[in-house]
Image 1 (cartoon, helix red, strand yellow):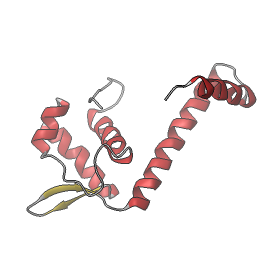
Image 2: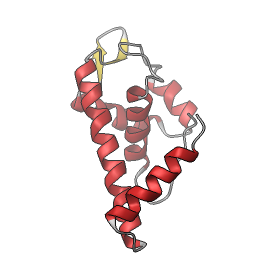
Image 3: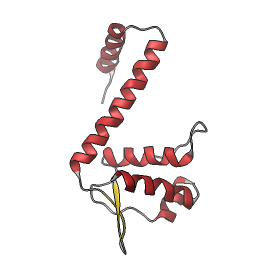
Image 4: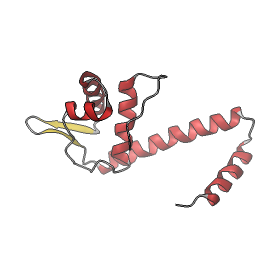
Length: 123
């Protein structure tokens, strides 16, 4: 997944979101070592201080941890990752529902549209 940013929110918070997605989608391996702050910042095209701030927040949340001389690692706590994954899904669903209701759809119509969209998906 490429790093993409919008002007509507601070970059560090978008980095936190994108790194969470990389972790919960298993793009970044459970217990895997992260690249250095400088390398990640270069890949994302951001200032290293901004990347450091995002990683510090993820450390506070427990999704990554530091080992003194070895660097940062993704958590190995599968239950935590499952919980974060479910929370992110709930946030996305709530945003979708709110958007559809603003368009004038009832909950029943939203479900019908969702089922139609799912049936048309080819994975």
